[in-house]
Amino acid sequence: MTEQRERRIQRIILCFTALVLLMLALAALNLACGSASLSPGELLTALGSAGGKSTASRIVWDIRLPRLLAAALLGGALSVSGFLLQTFFSNPIAGPFVLGVSSGAKLTVALTMIFCLSRGLPLSAAGMIAAAFAGSVLAMGLVLLAAGKLRGMARLIVCGVMIGYICSAITDFVVTFAEDSNIVNLHNWSLGSFSGIGWPELRVASLTVGAALVWTVFLSKSMGAYQLGESYAGSMGVNLRRFRTALILLSSVLSACVTAFAGPISFVGIAVPGLMKGLFRTAKPLLMIPACFLGGGCFCLLCDLIARTVFSPTELSISSVTAVFGAPVVIGMLLRRGKKTAP
Image: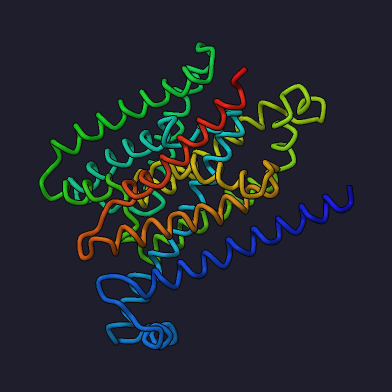
């Protein structure tokens, strides 16, 4: 028993070390690669000259560094949001994109952007998050309403997908009839991208995601009990109503923050938690929360690097790249789940 415990601890340490090293390597590649490649010497010089007037310094500090930090932060937030929804619904396929939460946030942000831009009103980063949060909660409320009337998780997932399609269709309709000057901004944002995120937006996103993650860690013990069943969690003193409300709010805030700044991003909230559970061979929340955050950051850094460099100077939407890599992971999860439940 002691030997198994030691092996488990060694595996956890090794996995976390690998994730940190992978994130550092991807961060370095994101800083060096792009339409204007930088050598290691130029990159180190630019990193040491914050506020410098050289081209390399401006590329690193004004464009690439805030972008890679946003990709790591928002990718981690989206992955943790997916883990919370999977815990809430006890289903590995639940996620912000599948359940229509991201699409609801996309709709309210689009409406808010059109309203403010058409009237010349300023739209702050906090205002974007608030609008996205309202849409996330609205979509989640519809999913929960359906959950009370539908039996079977498969039907609930289909209902969430339909809600997402409805929100996306309304968003496309609104964007089509928006003013020409607003369509470009809305179109680029609606496809999903980490470009255009600067230091002010990054600070707001960091505070929002950081506060949500701290609250999530405090709920890890309750989540562990909830994973063993509602009756067991209740016997352990977990207030189920407050706990469910907290999970909904936290997952909505995290996914709303991502949608507000980067647009809708698919499959990260489903694929990454599944990969982390397989890598660590556990679903314990105290381990999965930091693991999902690091894994989501690495996943989005890799996808953003591919989106920027494969067809440079043309840039792909981040959601398209995450779908290419995330969809096979989800299909594999479904096939593996089907084998386990087969007689």
